[in-house]
Amino acid sequence: MLVLSRQRDETIMIGDNIEITVVDIRGDKVRLGINAPKEISVHRKEVYDAIRRENKAAAQVKIDDVAGLGKISPANPGQEQPK
Amino acid sequence: MEIDSARFGVIVVDDQQIMTFPHGLLGFPQHSRFALVQTGPDSYFQWLQSLDDPNLAFVVTDPALFFKDYEVPIREENVADLQLADARLTQVRVICNRVGDWLTGNLLGPIVVNVANRLAQQVVLTEKKWTTRQMLLRLDVEVPAERELVAQPA
Image (cartoon, rainbow over all chains, first blue to last red; front, top):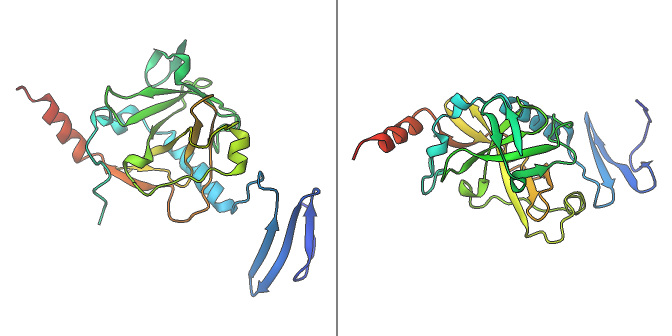
């Protein structure tokens, strides 16, 4: 991994059109500003990881786990939520 | 075409049921082709069965049936990846999981399908309102009860 030191308000470039600027540093929290073309998606990695984990878990669902789902077509199935 | 599946054996699907995920799904980047298989005649749920791996299948549903205010913003990167001519020609599905007695839906990582060309992609929402395990309905309590109700002789 390439490691660079930057101070507040300093920027790094990735390719020709992605800029990442250190906006603020407070304690152990760093705020970054990102300028990137609109077709580039920028996300927090933990969100990606959570979705990846959930996909892996959902791939384990067997027919018996959801037996009867084929018969469900209530008027409004999402009404009930846990208290 | 006939496809092999671990859960259903050999099933016949037509081309309209097949969708292509150019980037795969998160965690499954190698699996690009899936068929959408109905679970029952009027069911709100389908199985998304991989054409590349008989063992890989997901339960999916339309999140709008459960959450009226659920929206997936179509971003420019989605338009490019799905070759979307018209953002309105999309379908949204979410992958379901079983967590305890509950069927949950991954509303943080919905699947967006271009209805015109059947290209699909799992997108990551930036809004923190939704989770990967949004509760949809209770399985153990409601489902058998409904089934018995249906099975009762007239």
